[in-house]
Length: 165
Image (cartoon, rainbow, N blue to C red; front, side, top):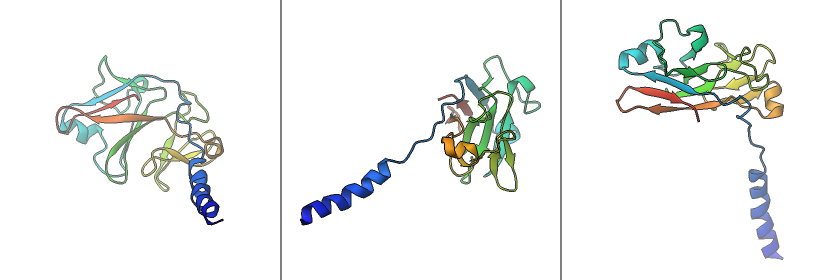
């Protein structure tokens, strides 16, 4: 009788750990993303050099103002939310709320809570310490996370390129 009890004590917790529901971060239609920072000065002016800094990139609206977009620049479905997480590492997300899945409904950073909030459905997402996971609103019950993009360091020390998955 000891062996079945031992097996149950090992398998039961493992079943709980593996049965967690996963988050859906594929609700936003795949669109190209390409934002290049070619110098340290460009990163200082338009990037997110410090922890909890953020910037929105929306090519159609020419945001941020003065950013040198090129013919090869793309900013995803609703735009790109570039943030520096709590460790100062750059992370990128599509600005469109995955609950609404519309280009014209984009999240905004609430500086009091440091969460990205959808003005339409009220869902909030943790972009500074938890990779765009939902923390409140319908996105939690539907398991919708913000669409993440990769941030890769380029060939030079301070060149960053944000690219789609």
